[in-house]
Structure formats: structure tokens, C-alpha cells
Length: 219
Image 1 (cartoon, rainbow, N blue to C red):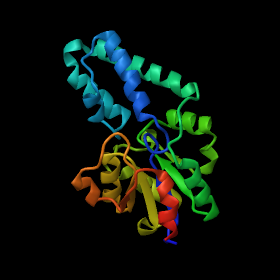
Image 2: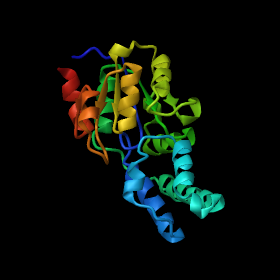
Image 3: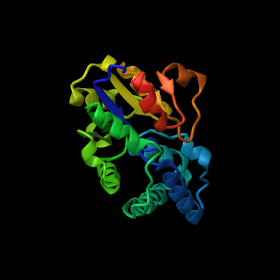
């Protein structure tokens, strides 16, 4: 059994299958408003904060005017939250099994997500797993988003563990880069984007699913 004293989880695309929901909601509103949006545009901003996404949308769509871009952003968020509130956001494969394993080993864990706290709590509560984490570090708690390591440094401080004995689970390039910058080992479970060679070098392991993790940790 590997010595692990604490675990840090990303959320979107790692605990929940949310990335496709974000994309589909945004694409729907973009089509309704005649914005030239695409999956390629969406993938550029995987793993970054809402604030950074908004800044980039204002840059990309500046010819539409600030008011129109603000409306596009707000309608996209509103549509996404309707899905969240419906309780139809599925957990990713292997989440519950991994949490059960960590419970058995009495390993504490925390969520560190670039999302805002209300969205994180809404999803965790909806899935009935909020109490299985010792805390949440959100975009509201940091001044610099991933790939800056601040969010993971704060999560580490909350856990009170050493970086070398802590493990991060991430699905995004920005998250993996932030983990490396924080000096914390990271396992990547890719969601929408396959890892590049550069990203692979920054990871401890890469798995297709969280279902593979318990067996790996037992070694």
C-alpha cells in the first residue's frame, strides 16, 4: 500500500461528467444568439476559472459588444444551472468506489476546483457526497486560477499533509500543471482532451477511469 496521507480531487470532468454539459449549454445559447462558437473554442478553456473564461469570451467576441457578450455568458450559465438543479449530472465512473476505498483506509480528502463554491456545493449535495470530503477550495478562495498552484497549496494546508504524501486527481492540462507547480504528485484521468507528451511527463500515472485507482494504490 502506497503511503498517502491525503487526497485532493478536482471536480468538473473528474468527479462529475459536467464538461459536456457546459459545452452543450453554451453551444445552445451561442446558436440562439448567432455567436460563432464551437467545441474547439470550448476546449481552449478547460480547467480555467469562470472569470478567465469570461475575459476570453469578451476578447473573442468583442465585435458583438459588451452587453451582448454579457447576455451570452449569463444565459449560458443559467442554462447550465438548470441542468445542475435537475439532479441529472452523473458522477464519473469509479467515484463512489474510490471514496469507499479511501474511507476504508481512513484517508482524508478535499475538493479543489476552479468552479465557484455554489456550483460545487450544488453538485456535491445533489450526489449525496458532500460530507465525504473534509472541505472545499473553490475559485472564490483564491486570487490566481489554475495553472497557478495556489488552489492546491491551500488544499494541502487544509489537509495538513506533506506534499510528497498527498495525491491529486485531475482531468485537465491546467490542473496537472498546477499540481506539478505545487510539488504534489498527480494522477490524470483525462476527460475531453487526451494528454500530450508534455503533460504525461508531469503525471505520476494516467488512467482511463477512477475504477483503476484503488488497485494501483494497494500496490
